[in-house]
Length: 248
Length: 129
Image (cartoon, rainbow over all chains, first blue to last red; front, side, top):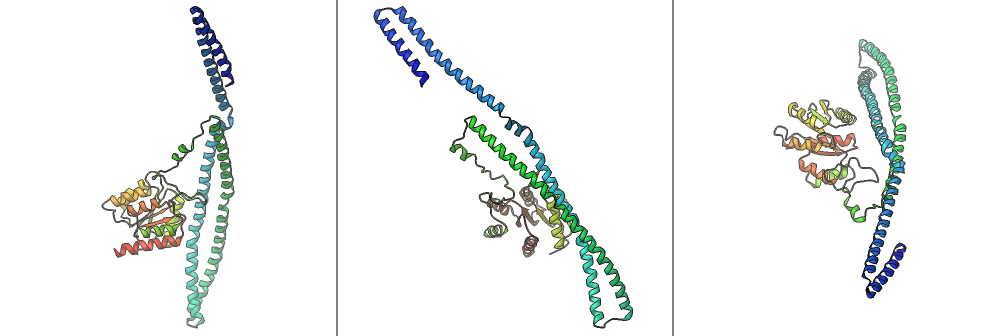
């Protein structure tokens, strides 16, 4: 308003002069004053335009200078994507490594179990004195071979358990990677909020409401504790309840 | 329940397929095959005389719900028992699956007991029908 008060006084002064000149019959002088008056108006318009241009230029420059955002979008986000892919790879490998051991050891346990039971049955008969000497000799051989089998088997189970233990080493590394990605997302959030504030394009509440995700076809994936999707059930029991209410 | 029945396991994550395969084997079902999405699974089902389909929902290519709908729409496959094993647990999705004709719905993560119970129920009902 300060800028305008000067101009207003100038207008007022010129207007009085014009009236005086017209009253005195000096039309030429009045014409000249009108022309000066319109030039004054143009001048204020150009001043305003200049100010806008300068502001626009400055905010453009401030975007360019906001190297944090450039860095985030240019290198850190593609980087984070790679890191997260690495997390998938590592967890995938660990799961397969673990399952390979389990798949290898389960049949071993089954075999040991079957052989042990076989010997146990024979042993019970021997204790009840329900066994011929020839059969007892066979039992002794079986026991001997079973003890060897048991010894080797236990060693394999121990190795397998160590392998499973070692396969859990992904947690440390994936944990670190994910923490760094969380930090990156926080940085990005700060930069974006700053960008929105700088550009003065804060959305009003009405717009914000309409942006909420409401796509029936979108899949939400696993529910994260504390971030449950609206309309999601919590666990198998509620699924069963819902299905039985539908006649299942 | 026929322990030799042929089962197709569909999931885009090989670890999950392997877990389900192992759990099924523990339950006595060792005649299993695998596919990584609906698009791969459907031709296998059409030509493979499968007795049971266990599928994930969220997969690239063709999702489990679309596979279920395709199975129900296929004259030869329409009565195939289908079990969805999925992390999706929105009410409307469960209702959608029920309406599409799913036989059982398990949410991940799940236990061996839940899998056993649902398979038992499905074949009890199929046997009674």
